[in-house]
Length: 195
Image 1 (cartoon, helix red, strand yellow):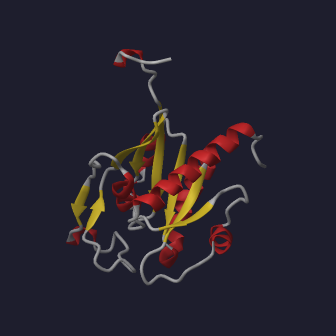
Image 2 (cartoon, one colour):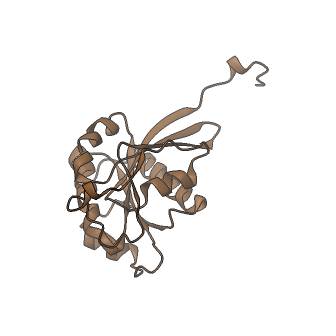
Image 3 (cartoon, one colour):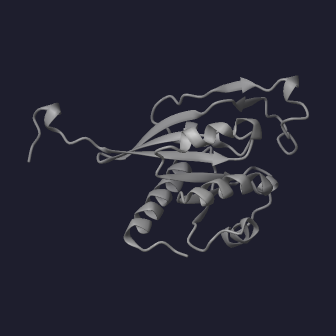
């Protein structure tokens, strides 16, 4: 069937996804690299007020931080558009996670192996809410390389949770993570929930 009038064309499915993780794991970078629109960011300069509050160990050169959320969009196909919401990483902004997660079908938990403990809270958040997620290990320059099974064991993840290695700066790598999340969500619909 040919569509001559724009109003006759079916609307693509819209899916809300979260990109979450600890402070400084690369959430803003991930969304910025994959978004087909100029991403909305709420980056602010880190000031002396954050001394003693934000742990900057292992984050040499980090000068900004997300204070609300990041937003981007990617069209995977004419039938599927993903809306990406990046969560703030600092503990003092965690109250926003409940609001941001409303209506989200799934999440990417971005992890930094130099500070893997920063991922525990995000994993716990999604597990406690029954939200499906994948873990994307952002392979920072100079960081030790770990295999996905080593990360799975360190984070005590259930066997069905995908662990993917990526470079958040690379659009193709970030898109691959999102495709893996969509496949994970579709597999969950087709199969009974694991125990």
